[in-house]
Length: 83
Image 1 (tube, rainbow, N blue to C red):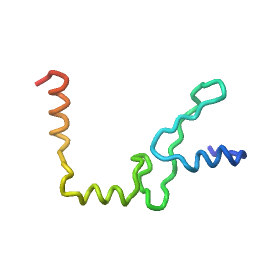
Image 2 (image 1 turned 180 degrees about the horizontal axis):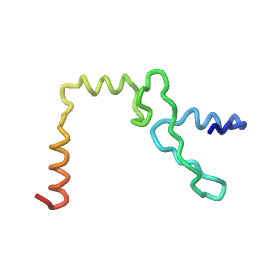
Image 3 (image 1 turned 90 degrees about the vertical axis):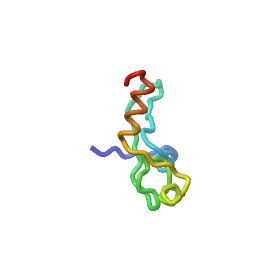
Image 4 (image 1 turned 90 degrees about the horizontal axis):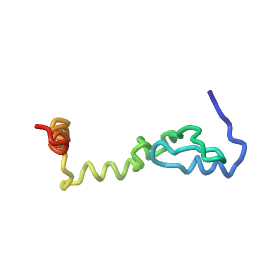
């Protein structure tokens, strides 16, 4: 389904959105849904809210610490008090 926004100001607000899950609410504050921006040039993963250049710099940074899913899960269990 397509919804065309005729108001240019509101459309510009959506066009400028970054990140993921922008909440769309009605005038009464009721949640109508969530808006996920389309990928833009230089931003392959808008849901991350960072540009491709920023991501490349993070990947290339020798100080970036990478961990496996197993390490993350073990740490989560540790934080929950499980062994």
